[in-house]
Image (cartoon, rainbow, N blue to C red; front, side):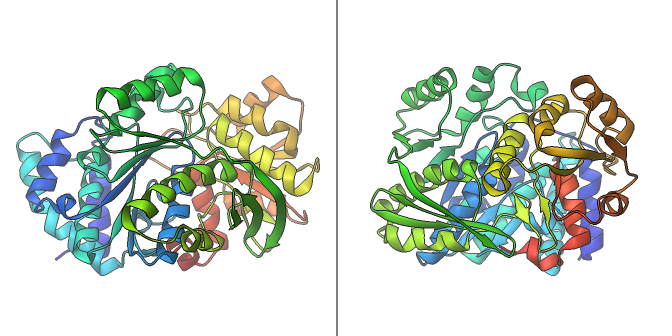
Length: 430
């Protein structure tokens, strides 16, 4: 059997095969693994932003309602083990290594025939096998990229969820929002309901057409107003309390975007409560325990870490900051990959920055901006001060003495700071 480190090295080798859109290889490897997906009930979530946060809400609520849960998410922040959570706990190193050892011979047989699974295809099958072995009641199943040809789309879910649409991965999903919506809508299955988050009419109509084609009921997000909003500081963030219809909700994820995500999660829970016969009130009480690392996460020393990496996500972050600190400007530590709309991100956060600290991302498998290149991008839109750091430790030194500091621009960057600042178990386990 592999050691954990050997398992990681093997998966790193699969990174070399990059991203392949298509389902045949995942289906083949899943069948070789004994078709574990047939033993599970999935809630399949796609969307440009909010997938993970919505999944974290569903996990917390379903746990409070008495269900055991599996939660497959990506990318990870500090460890691949985060991708496979059962009842909120990341998979152990020994179990991780065992799963890789079990699946590797089938993957190598496929590779010898010219069909080597990618990293994401392999981990998707790992997740299904892990959750089936643990006999979880419900699986929160997050897409990686798109939906139609995403490896996760080999399952027949209890329901599908599409949180929202924004420009992303345009080299794979298309340049127009309608093309991206078409790819996301590919997770909708015949006669299975789909929950649709708030989005522009032109993309919503694409999803509605797909639902109509396959006779899938559409569940629009609940339209009740959110009223009597209160914000309360917690050790690692904020809790927002509000009335929603007849319910008083305590949501331990901050910001207006999370209230939007809540509407999606509420609609899913409302459907599941009727389908599986549990108390919606009891489930909603679990939201006070919802946690999703690196999403407006406030550390006790005043460092705010957010993984937002596209203009929509950064705009939502800026709005959340306005709720917490008004118009106060704070140092922004920023890094990003070159395949993202980085200039759009800088435009969205520039007004919240006292000054910027730019740094490169030490991820050899993807091209990132250097600190100097980011400073040049900023100069195109603003005369705001920018300094360059070599790494996260230097960025923290350069901003030392500030009551508040913000880290954003990339989930990878967020993970690097969490490694430095937070005990591992606080990131691994929800």
